[in-house]
Length: 109
Image (cartoon, rainbow, N blue to C red; front, side):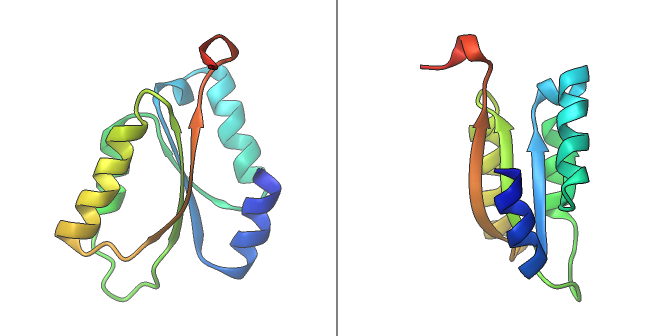
């Protein structure tokens, strides 16, 4: 939940990556605003390129961010692959703390 993220963020450098096409909608924008209002740092990534740019950026002297990935269920695999590739090939030192998949009520199983 957002409350759990906020309490974790107060203890560490946590960034919440919000990924997927749904973030381009009005509801998606409100969701981004609500997460930001909770006090955690947010990386809005409505397309996969924004997440890739963040993951591949050099961080030589910066402390590692802990990452929480929140993604549309259809793009979750691609988002995880980007993070994994950055860890393996670019030395990304961020720890993946958690993953949440977004879906609408008619897509639930």
